[in-house]
Image (cartoon, rainbow, N blue to C red; front, side, top):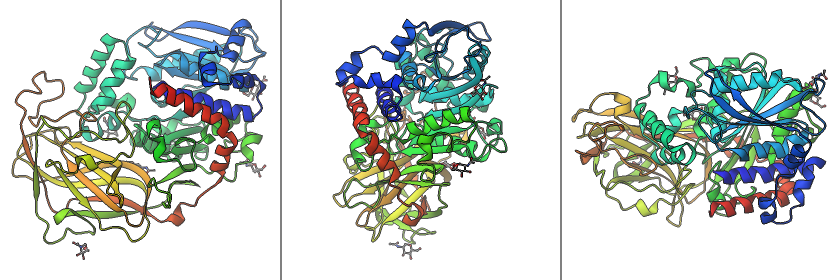
Length: 612
Ligand SMILES: *[C@@H]1O[C@H](CO)[C@@H](O)[C@H](O)[C@H]1NC(C)=O
Ligand SMILES: *[C@@H]1O[C@H](CO)[C@@H](O)[C@H](O)[C@H]1NC(C)=O
Ligand SMILES: *[C@@H]1O[C@H](CO)[C@@H](O)[C@H](O)[C@H]1NC(C)=O
Ligand SMILES: *[C@@H]1O[C@H](CO)[C@@H](O)[C@H](O)[C@H]1NC(C)=O
Ligand SMILES: *[C@@H]1O[C@H](CO)[C@@H](O)[C@H](O)[C@H]1NC(C)=O
């Protein structure tokens, strides 16, 4: 979990040093990775010497106290009512590292750096609430900060991953002092992340709770999640920011959303961006930007996208974060606020992302594009036809018949790659599962030309089963000429959490699977491939086909082997665009070159930590 923080730290340092911030320059003097890792944080140490650090056990509405550290920038003091300092806050369950990132970087830009241990984590009191208290806890904290003598009254939110979830929950209280949000690899939605299609993302949720939350709380939190496997709108509400609920109408501040195509949170961040961009308070709509790198949390797959990235990343979003935060100070809009960013103003539009491609030198993908908005696409159906054919068509081939396979919970399909955190992640080759008898595979003829998709993907399955409950899981892959099947995205549906009754043996159910999103160029000679199965373990918990819920202690007893059937007319739908819709920009590559030396240190740090 900390590896991306390290990357961020070094990438942030790279950006700030280029901006010639003398305060952070001293941090650049560590010559080796070991030096930097073992060194005290110079800027924080200086702040401590100068009594610019204050720790507060800040009281929340219910009396619980959360550990909060405020570090003022150089020259400011706590009792100076003319200091007029704006704070950047990170509320985190991971403890001190998050604050150090902010402190090292934004402190040097004249902002106060504030870190708070979320309720029930590290030094703070209370129990972890699965982000149910963060809208309130955040509001209390932001209001308190704004009232401090040194404060400008303005507070800016910073948050990666779990911290970003806490930041997104602020939509529920929209604290008055909140003036900007920079949210990295995170989501404004809980259910589609933890229960995509109603299937429990076991490895992600269980392991995260056990690693992050106090042991007693972790058990309770896992049980609470499992209790709400059927989408109970009341329980999920604090993690369910939707346009339908007008959740985004409160947004009146600029924001930057940094996502990743193979990130664990991707779909929830794209939904958030749409909300901030298109459904915010009137007049705010242009001050929202998104940046999508290939990988998000999935640093381990950096070798898959070596072209025009710094290990699957870019230094640009950090540069943009300075611009975002400074825009709240200059009164000029996000995109026009700082000299550094002005250089790039015309080259960086609101929607910037990496166009993925095969990991081959000849691939037309693997470059950056920047656009005013996501491109329009043509939803295009590919039928799951007889003989394992995937055919671009509105109708199934005449000879297509129902196909069945047995799903035995005792022998689930093993997970291989995808948007994972604790399991191997990224576009890994699925060929090791190819000969399994509990999977169906479909593929197109080799493509004659580049086939380009950008946007949401969907699978529509007509299914049946002889069990009362089961799962259906679909993967979309790029089949290389070498025979590898590289995973692009996947979707799931757990029947009981969608139909809310037992399945009937002779009935056909039409189920829609959200396959998340991508931007990808399939190369000539490659095929589009799709697999269907009823398990993907331990990415998803196993379905024992007996209709029992996750909290049922007898869940694994009376496990059934299900015979599951895919009917003719099942298809996947892909968002087709053309390469012309995705023009290449070289500015991001130039920025990467400019900052490469320092950013590489971040890569080394990330790799050394990943080995631990
Ligand atoms: C989230 O809110 C939407 C809109 O009200 C609702 O349709 C959906 O069921 C909610 N999701 C969950 C998981 O509660
Ligand atoms: C305080 O700083 C803000 C920018 O954050 C600026 O707009 C305002 O004029 C400043 N106020 C004073 C009294 O200096
Ligand atoms: C942004 O800056 C450019 C160049 O200085 C200027 O022409 C433009 O009007 C500015 N736009 C806004 C919205 O301030
Ligand atoms: C694919 O679909 C088209 C259009 O429906 C049809 O004409 C063609 O026969 C199908 N190809 C195969 C191999 O089934
Ligand atoms: C991503 O997918 C979701 C779910 O299908 C959809 O609502 C959203 O519009 C998509 N966004 C993009 C940019 O593809």
